[in-house]
Length: 107
Image (cartoon, one colour):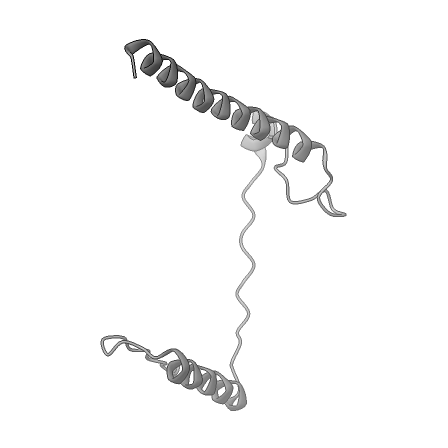
């Protein structure tokens, strides 16, 4: 293989890679444009909402998160959880160093 042939092969290889990268960029941009026009669901979707103006962001107060519901699992639910954990341990095994501790909350 002469120097000219080696140079030609190297240039062609780099050109193919460069063209592939450009096509990937174009595909990603086209997909983003299509995704912005698609309505995702009935409520306006899961897409990104447009940014609110700075004046509205400054004046809007941050709402407090709702209080966490006090859920007390029944003994039947705890028995099902324990059975599932036992079956998973028997099916998939566990390492000797791993432990799972379930603690009851004291009232």
